[in-house]
Amino acid sequence: MDAFADLAGGFATALTPTNLAFALLGVLLGTAIGVLPGIGPAMTVALLLPLTRGLDVQQALIMFAGIYYGGMYGGSTTSILLNTPGESSSVVTAIEGNRMARAGRAAQALATAAIGSFVAGTIATLLLALLAPTVADLAVQISPADRFAVMVLAFIAVTSVLGSSRVRGLAALGLGLTIGLVGIDFTSGQQRLTFGIAELADGIDVVVVAVGLFAVGEALWTAAHLRRRPLEVIPVGNPRMSRADWRRSWKPWLRGTAIGFPFGAVPAGGAEIPTFLSYVTEKRLSKHPEEFGKGAIEGVAGPEATNNASAAGGLVPLLTLGIPTTATAAVILFAIESYGIQPGPRLFDTEPELVWGLIASLFIGNAALLLLNLPLAPLWAKLLRIPRSYLYAGILFFASLGAYAANANQFDLFLLLVIGALGFMMRRYGLPLLPAIIGVILGPYAEEELRQALQISNGDLGGLFDPMSVVVYAIVALVLLWPLVRLALPRRATVPVLGEAVHEIEEAHHHTGLTESVSVERHTRREE
Image (tube, rainbow, N blue to C red; front, side):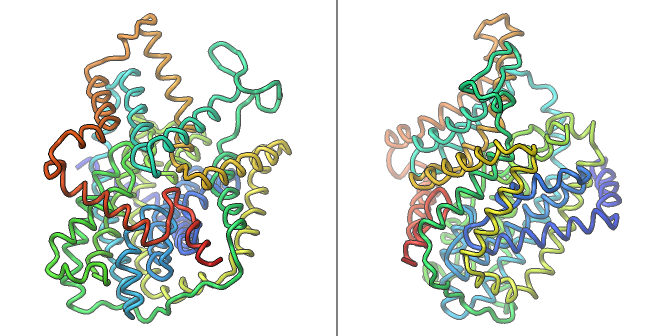
């Protein structure tokens, strides 16, 4: 019951006129940006980071949370109307959603995606409010060795489920960890990887890294492949669902919520695998399996609910452990830290008004998104007609302005260009961005926890192996060795649903024309 009392206090905070305005602004920005192809909520939050330094921390986080949810909503619009997902979590929606649109049912596909996202987001946010305090209480009791082990699990998991190979995932993680090491070692006072450049002594600002990888890298990639032929947008009618559509959608909405929230709440869970699992589950349980591949509404309802439930679940490890599971959550983590607040087990005790106001704003934003998406779906579709040459020129302008405003240092503009070129090369060779950004943000904290654990044990490596950390390392070993274990087991005995999900992942990437790094590579090649 304490959680409900705290949540009521959070609504009192979130419903103040100023905070309510920032919540509505966030969902508007998130939806609009999510609709635009190749631009996701992570890029939006990264671009806005330097521009919100003057805001109160609560106002900034409420707006970022609205962008987070709104980006999830908006991504379904491009998936359905353009067959071009903006993020990996929207890939599955394109499988059936675009085929529904081409069959003249774009409005119904957008409606089931919007309502399913609302249902899943509301239930998952309620679960967040009920479970997060308990998780935080348990997390207080874990040792530095345990926290280091959980971070290792996060590093390994994000490199194992993203990208076309684990090698590419590990390479991206290595790049992120290397960037995170640049600067002065606060223990020894020695400079690391500065190459004698005085401006690098304080390290590389995470704002510059985030904006460079997401915004500049994507803009350079699009410029390298884009032709000026306008996109073909499928017209949208009145987004209403028939009784038959409701009957076929409500169970997938609930099942998608049940699948998405646990995956999002697990450190390094993310939304790609659970959305594919939801799609496979609906395909198995549907009374109309023959419609899958031709525009089955269950194939839109389930994955979209899973996507939003996973987004809410991802806030559990972010707020209670300080560990992000998505790129957007990683950037929000830095936003919180930039105000001198460290997310983690004690956040609910030290900043209760901030946390519960943020959770309450998610309910408000979720309701606002439903009201926005249903009547304004035709308007969002018109945003897709903006020439991307103009769009990315504006992104580069705001990226440069934001990078300079972060520290008022011209050297940061040079770093922005270098990291943007790195982001371009990562897309060129299929390296996922999430392991890199998580490596930059969590790498220094993992190093700190490792040093604390070794100091407690007087340098004995056995101090890294507490009972909990041993269990976590066993999970890490299973994640790393799972491909070999799967080969050793009988073919039909190796978790058939997950195996089919992996097959669907490969088919979906081929169908939607999306690389694992979630760029617009194949789509823009088709334009050529």
